[in-house]
Image (cartoon, rainbow, N blue to C red; front, side, top):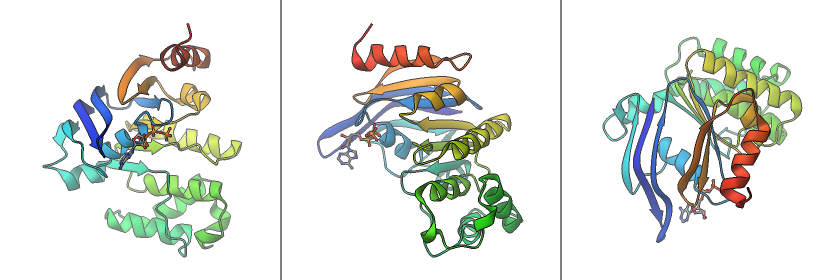
Length: 234
Ligand SMILES: Nc1ncnc2c1ncn2[C@@H]1O[C@H](COP(=O)(O)OP(=O)(O)OP(=O)(O)O)[C@@H](O)[C@H]1O
């Protein structure tokens, strides 16, 4: 479970997050929607502990960030805009490298399985620098889940993926949900949000403008709620 209380983030005199209160329950798959500059990536970065909040409290599974840094770090898988992969390493070398950081057992076996899961077995030993953007994104996703995190933070994960890779990613997220993983996904892709998420949060000007559950992958409902909050339509 993730608990966020009165979270604010200020940078260069700009208040990016303006008092976020949010509870995400274990196993939920949550999409964070909002216009450009709303503070979505900043919220994810705070949760991933890449940047410090200006004030407020974040606890993950009851643990506070400040006191349990390493323990929490192991619980989290984070997919940022950049892949974090090493260009000259192959997918397998990258995944083994990151897996070793987390002290994974049988890391090579797991790395091979993940590369297969994201559909790139054929390129197992090819340097990542030769890969297309979508291929890099697939391996970046595998990297984010190499340590089987309990919490998955994904920043625009569908960007650059073709239809096949979108299905692969969605299946990865769904199968992790079945194992109890909690996922927060920043996205501009309403269709994917409606398809795999059970809850939607709309962020606007650093505040939560709406927070609701969806049923039956109701894309129309998501679009209508978004228009109402962000575009001011009724
Ligand atoms: N380190 C920083 N210093 C100053 N301003 C920043 C910093 N980081 C982010 N911002 C500003 O905060 C606002 C929110 O940025 P953020 O990247 O969180 O938005 P976002 O909702 O993810 O946007 P997008 O949909 O365009 O990716 C933007 O106006 C951005 O320029």
